[in-house]
Image (cartoon, rainbow, N blue to C red; front, side, top):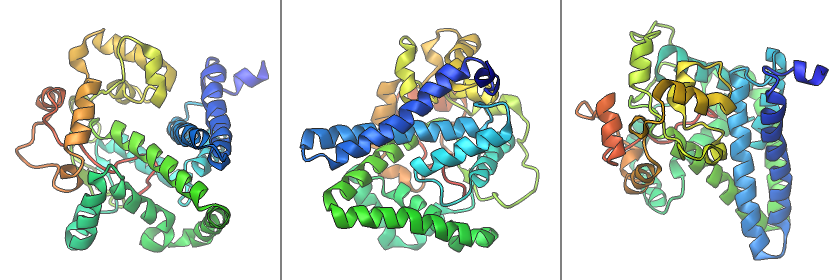
Length: 340
Protein backbone atom coordinates (compact mmCIF):
# COMPACT_ATOMS: atom_id res chain seq x y z
CA UNK A 1 0.00 0.00 0.00
CA UNK A 2 1.21 3.48 -0.90
CA UNK A 3 -0.02 4.84 2.45
CA UNK A 4 2.30 2.48 4.31
CA UNK A 5 5.31 3.32 2.12
CA UNK A 6 5.27 6.98 3.13
CA UNK A 7 5.87 6.06 6.77
CA UNK A 8 9.33 5.72 8.28
CA UNK A 9 8.42 2.15 9.22
CA UNK A 10 5.37 0.10 8.13
CA UNK A 11 4.26 -0.16 11.78
CA UNK A 12 4.10 3.63 11.88
CA UNK A 13 0.75 3.60 10.11
CA UNK A 14 -0.74 1.91 13.17
CA UNK A 15 1.23 3.46 16.04
CA UNK A 16 1.84 6.98 14.75
CA UNK A 17 -1.59 7.00 13.12
CA UNK A 18 -3.25 6.07 16.41
CA UNK A 19 -1.29 8.70 18.33
CA UNK A 20 -2.13 11.49 15.88
CA UNK A 21 -5.77 10.39 15.69
CA UNK A 22 -5.97 10.40 19.49
CA UNK A 23 -4.39 13.85 19.67
CA UNK A 24 -6.79 15.31 17.09
CA UNK A 25 -9.90 13.54 18.39
CA UNK A 26 -8.99 14.27 22.00
CA UNK A 27 -8.45 17.93 21.15
CA UNK A 28 -11.92 18.20 19.63
CA UNK A 29 -13.68 16.14 22.31
CA UNK A 30 -11.81 18.00 25.04
CA UNK A 31 -12.96 21.36 23.74
CA UNK A 32 -16.55 20.10 23.53
CA UNK A 33 -16.25 19.08 27.16
CA UNK A 34 -15.13 22.58 28.14
CA UNK A 35 -18.25 24.10 26.57
CA UNK A 36 -20.60 21.67 28.33
CA UNK A 37 -22.87 23.11 31.07
CA UNK A 38 -22.14 19.99 33.14
CA UNK A 39 -19.18 20.33 35.54
CA UNK A 40 -18.36 16.63 35.31
CA UNK A 41 -18.04 16.98 31.54
CA UNK A 42 -15.94 20.10 32.12
CA UNK A 43 -13.52 18.13 34.29
CA UNK A 44 -13.33 15.29 31.78
CA UNK A 45 -12.82 17.83 29.02
CA UNK A 46 -9.86 19.37 30.85
CA UNK A 47 -8.22 15.96 31.35
CA UNK A 48 -8.83 14.82 27.77
CA UNK A 49 -7.72 18.12 26.24
CA UNK A 50 -4.62 18.35 28.42
CA UNK A 51 -3.56 14.82 27.52
CA UNK A 52 -4.38 15.24 23.82
CA UNK A 53 -2.09 18.28 23.71
CA UNK A 54 0.56 16.25 25.55
CA UNK A 55 0.45 13.49 22.93
CA UNK A 56 0.56 16.14 20.20
CA UNK A 57 3.69 17.54 21.84
CA UNK A 58 5.40 14.15 21.93
CA UNK A 59 4.48 13.60 18.29
CA UNK A 60 6.17 16.92 17.49
CA UNK A 61 9.24 15.34 19.08
CA UNK A 62 8.86 12.27 16.85
CA UNK A 63 8.52 14.49 13.79
CA UNK A 64 11.60 16.43 14.85
CA UNK A 65 13.59 13.21 14.68
CA UNK A 66 12.01 12.35 11.30
CA UNK A 67 10.56 9.14 12.74
CA UNK A 68 7.02 9.41 11.40
CA UNK A 69 7.47 9.71 7.63
CA UNK A 70 10.31 8.90 5.25
CA UNK A 71 10.43 12.43 3.85
CA UNK A 72 11.73 15.24 6.03
CA UNK A 73 9.18 17.61 4.49
CA UNK A 74 6.27 15.39 5.55
CA UNK A 75 7.58 15.25 9.12
CA UNK A 76 7.94 19.03 9.12
CA UNK A 77 4.38 19.52 7.88
CA UNK A 78 2.89 17.26 10.54
CA UNK A 79 5.15 18.67 13.25
CA UNK A 80 4.16 22.20 12.29
CA UNK A 81 0.45 21.31 12.39
CA UNK A 82 0.71 19.63 15.78
CA UNK A 83 2.66 22.58 17.17
CA UNK A 84 -0.52 24.64 16.73
CA UNK A 85 -2.43 22.15 18.87
CA UNK A 86 0.09 22.20 21.71
CA UNK A 87 0.54 25.99 21.59
CA UNK A 88 4.12 26.01 20.30
CA UNK A 89 3.56 27.58 16.88
CA UNK A 90 4.70 31.11 17.79
CA UNK A 91 8.26 30.24 16.84
CA UNK A 92 9.13 27.98 13.95
CA UNK A 93 9.18 24.20 13.92
CA UNK A 94 12.73 24.28 12.57
CA UNK A 95 13.89 26.39 15.53
CA UNK A 96 12.47 23.80 17.93
CA UNK A 97 14.12 21.03 15.96
CA UNK A 98 17.48 22.82 15.82
CA UNK A 99 17.59 23.40 19.57
CA UNK A 100 16.62 19.81 20.31
CA UNK A 101 19.27 18.41 17.98
CA UNK A 102 21.86 20.63 19.64
CA UNK A 103 20.85 18.86 22.86
CA UNK A 104 21.59 15.48 21.29
CA UNK A 105 24.72 16.46 19.36
CA UNK A 106 26.33 18.63 22.05
CA UNK A 107 25.28 16.42 24.98
CA UNK A 108 24.04 19.58 26.67
CA UNK A 109 20.91 21.49 27.65
CA UNK A 110 21.51 24.26 25.13
CA UNK A 111 19.47 27.44 25.71
CA UNK A 112 19.41 31.16 24.93
CA UNK A 113 17.39 32.37 27.92
CA UNK A 114 19.29 32.37 31.22
CA UNK A 115 16.24 32.04 33.43
CA UNK A 116 18.18 31.83 36.71
CA UNK A 117 19.90 35.13 35.95
CA UNK A 118 16.54 36.66 35.04
CA UNK A 119 14.75 35.42 38.17
CA UNK A 120 17.58 36.39 40.52
CA UNK A 121 17.64 39.82 38.88
CA UNK A 122 13.89 40.25 39.37
CA UNK A 123 13.22 39.22 43.00
CA UNK A 124 9.52 40.11 42.90
CA UNK A 125 9.00 37.84 39.88
CA UNK A 126 10.95 35.12 41.69
CA UNK A 127 8.82 35.44 44.83
CA UNK A 128 5.59 35.29 42.82
CA UNK A 129 6.92 32.29 40.88
CA UNK A 130 7.82 30.46 44.09
CA UNK A 131 4.43 31.27 45.61
CA UNK A 132 2.52 29.92 42.60
CA UNK A 133 4.75 26.88 42.23
CA UNK A 134 4.03 25.96 45.85
CA UNK A 135 0.41 25.54 44.73
CA UNK A 136 1.59 23.39 41.77
CA UNK A 137 0.85 26.18 39.30
CA UNK A 138 3.63 25.97 36.64
CA UNK A 139 4.56 29.64 36.86
CA UNK A 140 8.12 28.99 35.72
CA UNK A 141 6.82 27.34 32.55
CA UNK A 142 4.36 30.19 32.03
CA UNK A 143 7.31 32.60 31.95
CA UNK A 144 8.93 30.42 29.30
CA UNK A 145 5.65 30.30 27.37
CA UNK A 146 5.37 34.10 27.49
CA UNK A 147 8.81 34.38 25.90
CA UNK A 148 7.80 31.80 23.29
CA UNK A 149 4.71 33.83 22.39
CA UNK A 150 6.81 36.94 21.71
CA UNK A 151 9.91 35.07 20.56
CA UNK A 152 10.78 37.30 17.58
CA UNK A 153 10.51 40.44 19.72
CA UNK A 154 12.62 39.04 22.56
CA UNK A 155 15.38 37.12 20.77
CA UNK A 156 17.52 39.37 18.52
CA UNK A 157 18.53 36.50 16.23
CA UNK A 158 14.87 35.93 15.36
CA UNK A 159 13.74 39.45 14.53
CA UNK A 160 13.25 38.33 10.91
CA UNK A 161 10.35 36.12 12.07
CA UNK A 162 8.23 39.00 13.32
CA UNK A 163 5.67 38.93 10.51
CA UNK A 164 4.97 35.25 11.11
CA UNK A 165 5.06 35.72 14.88
CA UNK A 166 2.49 38.53 14.71
CA UNK A 167 0.23 36.42 12.48
CA UNK A 168 0.24 33.53 14.97
CA UNK A 169 -0.36 35.89 17.90
CA UNK A 170 -3.33 37.48 16.11
CA UNK A 171 -4.87 34.12 15.19
CA UNK A 172 -4.39 32.32 18.50
CA UNK A 173 -4.88 35.47 20.57
CA UNK A 174 -8.01 36.40 18.63
CA UNK A 175 -9.53 32.95 19.11
CA UNK A 176 -8.73 32.95 22.82
CA UNK A 177 -10.13 36.47 23.22
CA UNK A 178 -13.33 35.40 21.47
CA UNK A 179 -13.65 32.42 23.81
CA UNK A 180 -12.94 34.64 26.81
CA UNK A 181 -15.68 37.08 25.80
CA UNK A 182 -18.08 34.20 25.21
CA UNK A 183 -17.30 32.34 28.43
CA UNK A 184 -14.73 33.14 31.09
CA UNK A 185 -15.25 29.62 32.43
CA UNK A 186 -14.25 27.97 29.15
CA UNK A 187 -11.17 30.17 28.82
CA UNK A 188 -10.14 29.32 32.38
CA UNK A 189 -10.68 25.60 31.80
CA UNK A 190 -8.49 25.74 28.67
CA UNK A 191 -5.76 27.46 30.68
CA UNK A 192 -5.95 24.64 33.25
CA UNK A 193 -5.74 22.02 30.48
CA UNK A 194 -2.72 23.77 29.01
CA UNK A 195 -0.99 23.92 32.38
CA UNK A 196 -1.73 20.22 32.79
CA UNK A 197 0.20 19.58 29.57
CA UNK A 198 3.04 21.78 30.83
CA UNK A 199 3.15 19.86 34.10
CA UNK A 200 3.31 16.46 32.40
CA UNK A 201 6.08 17.55 30.03
CA UNK A 202 8.26 19.05 32.74
CA UNK A 203 7.61 16.13 35.09
CA UNK A 204 9.08 13.80 32.48
CA UNK A 205 12.00 16.09 31.57
CA UNK A 206 12.97 16.93 35.14
CA UNK A 207 15.12 13.90 35.95
CA UNK A 208 16.34 12.71 32.56
CA UNK A 209 19.73 14.46 32.77
CA UNK A 210 21.95 15.61 35.61
CA UNK A 211 23.68 18.58 33.99
CA UNK A 212 22.65 22.27 34.16
CA UNK A 213 21.64 24.30 31.14
CA UNK A 214 24.23 26.06 29.00
CA UNK A 215 23.58 29.49 27.43
CA UNK A 216 25.18 28.56 24.10
CA UNK A 217 22.28 28.26 21.65
CA UNK A 218 23.77 30.81 19.27
CA UNK A 219 27.41 29.94 19.97
CA UNK A 220 29.24 27.66 17.58
CA UNK A 221 32.22 26.50 19.59
CA UNK A 222 32.57 22.73 19.75
CA UNK A 223 31.66 21.61 23.32
CA UNK A 224 34.14 19.37 25.11
CA UNK A 225 31.72 16.45 25.51
CA UNK A 226 30.30 16.54 21.99
CA UNK A 227 30.18 13.04 20.55
CA UNK A 228 31.14 11.37 23.83
CA UNK A 229 28.67 8.49 23.78
CA UNK A 230 29.74 6.98 27.10
CA UNK A 231 29.42 10.35 28.86
CA UNK A 232 25.98 10.85 27.29
CA UNK A 233 24.67 7.53 28.59
CA UNK A 234 26.23 8.05 32.02
CA UNK A 235 24.40 11.37 32.42
CA UNK A 236 21.07 10.28 30.92
CA UNK A 237 18.39 8.59 33.02
CA UNK A 238 15.18 6.69 32.36
CA UNK A 239 11.94 7.35 34.22
CA UNK A 240 9.25 5.12 32.71
CA UNK A 241 5.86 4.76 34.32
CA UNK A 242 6.19 0.98 34.46
CA UNK A 243 8.62 -1.77 33.47
CA UNK A 244 5.97 -4.47 33.79
CA UNK A 245 2.99 -2.99 31.93
CA UNK A 246 4.21 -1.45 28.69
CA UNK A 247 0.93 0.22 27.78
CA UNK A 248 1.11 2.49 30.85
CA UNK A 249 4.07 4.20 29.20
CA UNK A 250 1.92 5.13 26.22
CA UNK A 251 0.58 7.91 28.46
CA UNK A 252 3.69 9.86 27.40
CA UNK A 253 4.56 7.85 24.26
CA UNK A 254 7.35 5.95 26.03
CA UNK A 255 9.32 9.16 26.62
CA UNK A 256 10.52 7.77 29.94
CA UNK A 257 12.81 5.29 28.19
CA UNK A 258 15.31 8.08 27.74
CA UNK A 259 18.53 6.09 27.72
CA UNK A 260 17.14 4.06 24.84
CA UNK A 261 16.20 7.24 23.00
CA UNK A 262 19.68 8.73 23.44
CA UNK A 263 21.33 5.44 22.52
CA UNK A 264 19.64 5.49 19.10
CA UNK A 265 17.60 8.52 18.08
CA UNK A 266 16.34 6.66 15.00
CA UNK A 267 14.15 4.36 17.11
CA UNK A 268 10.47 5.46 17.08
CA UNK A 269 8.53 5.74 20.32
CA UNK A 270 6.72 2.40 20.04
CA UNK A 271 10.01 0.42 19.96
CA UNK A 272 11.74 2.20 22.86
CA UNK A 273 10.67 -0.35 25.54
CA UNK A 274 12.20 -3.14 23.44
CA UNK A 275 15.37 -1.09 22.99
CA UNK A 276 15.51 -0.43 26.74
CA UNK A 277 15.27 -4.15 27.50
CA UNK A 278 18.06 -4.86 25.02
CA UNK A 279 20.24 -2.40 26.92
CA UNK A 280 19.29 -3.14 30.53
CA UNK A 281 17.12 -6.25 30.57
CA UNK A 282 14.34 -6.13 33.16
CA UNK A 283 16.61 -4.56 35.79
CA UNK A 284 14.62 -2.03 37.81
CA UNK A 285 17.88 -0.64 39.23
CA UNK A 286 18.47 1.05 35.88
CA UNK A 287 15.47 3.40 36.18
CA UNK A 288 14.04 6.00 38.54
CA UNK A 289 10.81 4.55 40.00
CA UNK A 290 7.56 6.48 39.72
CA UNK A 291 7.22 6.82 43.49
CA UNK A 292 10.58 8.59 43.70
CA UNK A 293 9.68 10.79 40.75
CA UNK A 294 6.50 11.91 42.48
CA UNK A 295 8.28 12.55 45.79
CA UNK A 296 10.93 14.68 44.09
CA UNK A 297 8.35 16.60 42.09
CA UNK A 298 6.40 17.34 45.27
CA UNK A 299 9.25 18.05 47.71
CA UNK A 300 11.39 20.15 45.36
CA UNK A 301 8.68 22.07 43.50
CA UNK A 302 9.91 25.39 44.93
CA UNK A 303 13.58 24.64 45.58
CA UNK A 304 14.31 23.54 42.01
CA UNK A 305 13.26 26.87 40.45
CA UNK A 306 16.74 28.36 40.90
CA UNK A 307 19.98 26.91 42.22
CA UNK A 308 19.10 23.30 41.44
CA UNK A 309 22.69 22.47 40.47
CA UNK A 310 25.93 22.85 42.41
CA UNK A 311 29.42 21.38 42.30
CA UNK A 312 28.56 19.05 45.19
CA UNK A 313 25.52 17.52 43.50
CA UNK A 314 25.77 13.83 42.55
CA UNK A 315 26.47 13.01 38.92
CA UNK A 316 26.23 9.95 36.74
CA UNK A 317 25.58 6.72 38.62
CA UNK A 318 25.51 8.60 41.92
CA UNK A 319 22.72 10.83 40.59
CA UNK A 320 20.70 7.77 39.58
CA UNK A 321 21.06 6.23 43.03
CA UNK A 322 20.18 9.53 44.73
CA UNK A 323 17.16 9.98 42.45
CA UNK A 324 15.98 6.48 43.30
CA UNK A 325 16.05 7.58 46.94
CA UNK A 326 14.28 10.85 46.00
CA UNK A 327 17.27 12.90 47.17
CA UNK A 328 17.83 15.20 44.17
CA UNK A 329 16.23 18.47 43.07
CA UNK A 330 15.55 17.74 39.43
CA UNK A 331 15.49 20.31 36.66
CA UNK A 332 12.71 22.74 35.87
CA UNK A 333 10.97 24.34 32.89
CA UNK A 334 12.86 22.22 30.34
CA UNK A 335 10.92 21.25 27.24
CA UNK A 336 11.64 20.39 23.61
CA UNK A 337 8.73 22.73 22.73
CA UNK A 338 10.73 25.82 23.71
CA UNK A 339 13.22 26.86 21.04
CA UNK A 340 15.32 29.16 23.22
